[in-house]
Each structure stands twice: as C-alpha cells, then as structure tokens.
Image (tube, rainbow, N blue to C red; front, side, top):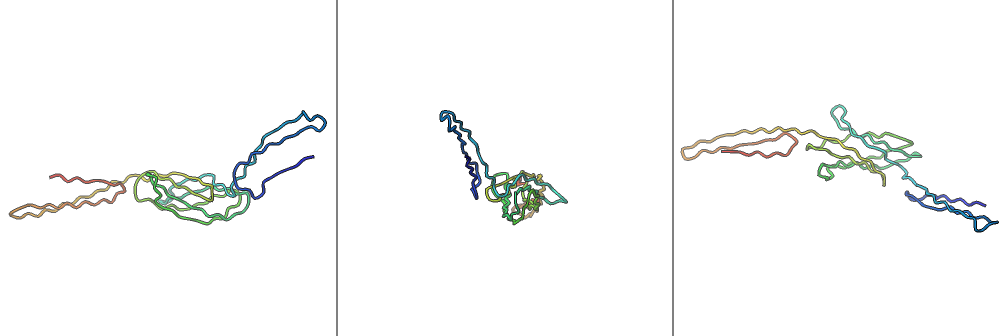
Length: 169
C-alpha cells in the first residue's frame, strides 16, 4: 500500500514532509525519513551582466523557464548611494534558457551602479562603473572704475563629478 502526494499549483517555496513506514507484522518496526519538495518560481532569473558595446551600456539577463511564459520584467538602475535613478519595464517571452538583452541609459554622474532585474519574486543584479570626468572651465571678467574694481568669475562644469570652485583674491 503506497500513497503519493505532490503539490499542484503550489506557491513557490520549500515544502517539508516526512515519509513514515511501519510493518504490519511487527508494529514495533518502523522508520521515518524527512524529505523536501522545492517549488521554483515560474521563471528564474539566473544572472545579469552589464557591458559597454559600441559606446552604449547593454544588460544581458539570463532567464530560465520550464515552459513557455510571457513575463513582465522591471529593471532598476541604482546609484552608488543606493537611490533608484532609473526604472524601466519590458515584457518578454521565455522558453527554456534565454538571454534577454536590453540597453541601459547612461547615468549622469560617475560611480559604480547596480542594475537589478525583477520578475515576480525572482531577481538578478549586476554592476557597472562610469569613470570620472573632471572638466571645469573658469572665465573672469574685470570692471575697473575710479572708485572700485569688480571681478566676475563664471565657472562651468561639463564633467560628471560634483565639484567646488574656490575663488581667491
């Protein structure tokens, strides 16, 4: 006599059970064996890498599904301080193991950023860096009168690093 059990349409997660057997002829003879069943998410996001191709950032997401599914992906670009600076979504069809490639907008400031892709409760993330560009230009213009001298200094930064300019007399 055997009885089987398998969760159908179960929520993803780990389910723990125990299997117990007992002898009919010798009721004192029995054994119990624990076991688990792991229900994976419908789509598993395995890894995410970010590379620069032809000057543009490109995210490559490796996704895995046992059957053909259409999934809604959310990509978050996270700054070095931990703030989400960009979010975009994509609807993709996955069957088996698939690589999903998406362009990532370049952040404005230098630093190491993280890209997180999420589909349901599955997620994967990768990092990329934007190098520092220091480009300050200062112009001064003076106005002389009989009574005073006035100097106007105009500073412009076209770099990607917040900078401070100190004018000295």
